[in-house]
Length: 237
Image (cartoon, rainbow, N blue to C red; front, side, top):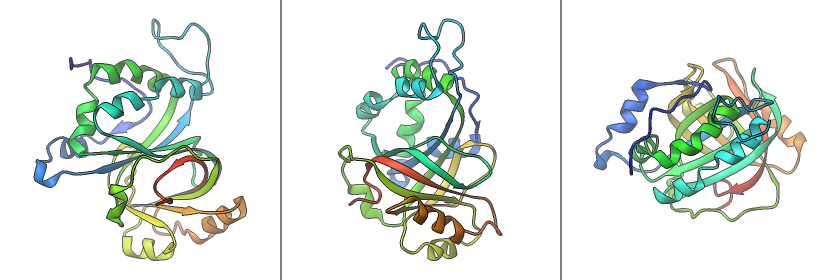
């Protein structure tokens, strides 16, 4: 696979130190990693000259064109959670879509960035995305690693929480009914580092708001959102 030019984007700041950590894991210290993507789109995709699609499209439509599934399949990665944000219940910023990819190794995520086939698709993400936070996680329940790629679902609602917390055990205890992930690093974002991610299957929007009321921001920032999920092997075994 020939190498692509360095990827260009304006949707977030890369944590280069953590990126180096991902790239240099020896095999005996490497393994599956979950890349949790929080995405906010431009109203109109911002293509540069020569990269457009012949007409004006939305940022969300550009992200649909980005769809890297074919590349992910080649490197043994799976989309394990995907959906549109139905409500932003807590947090200064709002989000439009959530996607989670499970990579077989940390190094495979870094290696993907230099693939020419990925670079060809990435121009659409760069055009469509206003900002992204990419949180790199491991599940508390490691059996999640063995779950297969999920089948598409009818829309179902999941509450998602992303938190800063000096005491992860206390954060997990606050939402003991959730599927829990601890954050290893935040590879792309706005400089804030996140600590825990939680997923709770709910029945309606009122339950999402009730969860938001339980999440304190006294010791750091938090996002709570309701996600209309169409793929899910996180809360569904």
